[in-house]
Image (cartoon, rainbow, N blue to C red; front, side, top):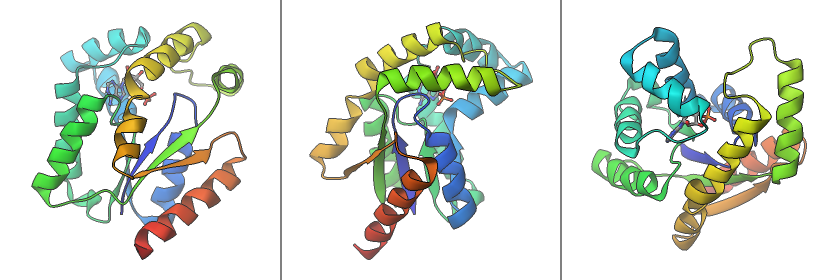
Length: 193
Ligand code: AMP
């Protein structure tokens, strides 16, 4: 199965994607993780990514589309994939549709994990307090910038998929287990269709 998890930074997409990977053998594809790996490697892409990520901005669409296009063609995505952090703009969503059609693949579910902004700010403060390896974009100021970018550039994806009748929303403010259960139910229904 091929699934997109949409939602603001800190909504719990990564946690849910990991659970799906463990339970169903689908591959979690986190563009944020790929970029952080590039930063760690010290490559030219990493240098560019660090600056943009620390500013809470988005990387260029073409670059991200190419990154995902290469990645979903790998053998470990044969059981399906979970897109976590991609698409982040309507342009990326359109390019994804074209890419999947060209590869003869389809999306089984587009799931929005909805969380209010105030809750996200509380969560990031907790994450910083509890984490030993703090991400350099994990601070309240950058989160607020990232939330503004989410509302301006990523949230328009929601009507894009809703218009195609493909969007399902879960309440990301429920417990992690409850959100997982809702996602499982959505996937079960998607398989039945
Ligand atoms: P994430 O780990 O998904 O929160 O992503 C961390 C950062 O990586 C984002 O704030 C962006 O700067 C960058 N990024 C990740 N995915 C994308 C994407 N699909 N398009 C543009 N920028 C991205």
